[in-house]
Length: 368
Ligand code: UD1
Image 1 (cartoon, rainbow, N blue to C red):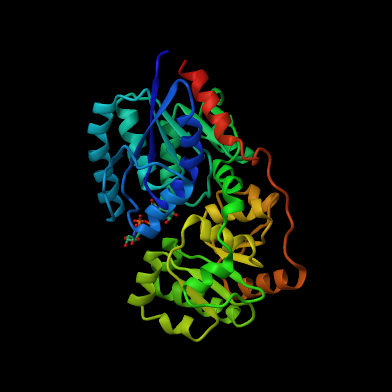
Image 2: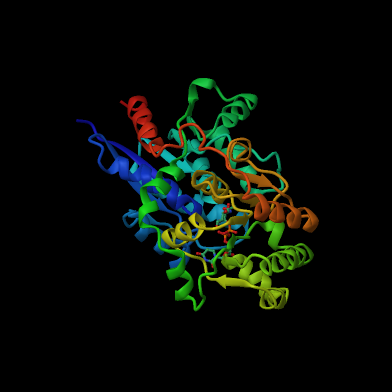
């Protein structure tokens, strides 16, 4: 039987839980053969290795070890280092996930070499081109031959941008495949907190913050931390802090904001620790894309600290509310969740743990 090799690309933390379930299905496939490329965009134990281990992703076949830098530098470095890999490995297609710099960099190399490109999590749009991820999404979709979507809105976005409908497949959400596969093994919140010297409060909220728009501007970050610290006095917050955010808090001298309040600042957590923390939280305050979806799947109220979302189904059907960055509004929305229990929501169509199987079967058909 002819073996069909697929180069599967990961680069940053939010990619790992998306590639894990796809790679697992591909590994057992009689014909399709995954070749795992890690660009090295994220490289720390906390940002990469813990995820590979916990999600059962094997060591990558190649690590491009690109590391951190400006957007242009990072994207260019990934492109330069990925090109010879494509030449040597000669895959029949390149599969990319999500919207990080590794996604567009490898997508661009594949398209220029006329290697078919597959994009998982296609068609999401925030409508906000100041977000680097939005640029990555639009361009990757334009380059892709097969586009797999997580929600109905994505197909409408893609059609509007002139993508041929026969390239688009609504398959559900691979990140939710990973979530359902690992939920039983989630690390209890009490154990995670104890590891960092904190007791588990009766009730707590989880906070994450890393978007450039929120953390790179000293005034914005100060304003957000001030209101979050105030919320912490009503509902203790657990804050696994992204390295980028930790660096900004220190550089802007804002540590005092958190010291004064009931906010447990932790280093970045592994996948199972984060899952355990979120599943039992009273609410989640975040600017992450993935957490908006994971909270919807878990039925935990989510308040998104951004002005828009590229994942509208989490608002129309799930537990998500886009609250923006206005302290007054954030305060009011938190109070509402504490009083009413927050949005209940339902799990969106095809977020059933089987998206990866659907994806692999469509790829198999396409390349047979
Ligand atoms: C990237 C993604 C973003 C995603 C986020 C999740 C893009 C454009 N953005 O943003 O969509 O939500 O990852 O984390 O690709 N760092 C470490 N250790 C690491 C990796 C990074 O300390 O393993 C630090 C570095 O100081 C670096 C900073 O974090 O400068 C930012 O990392 P980078 O990958 O450039 O972007 P993120 O902000 O993480």
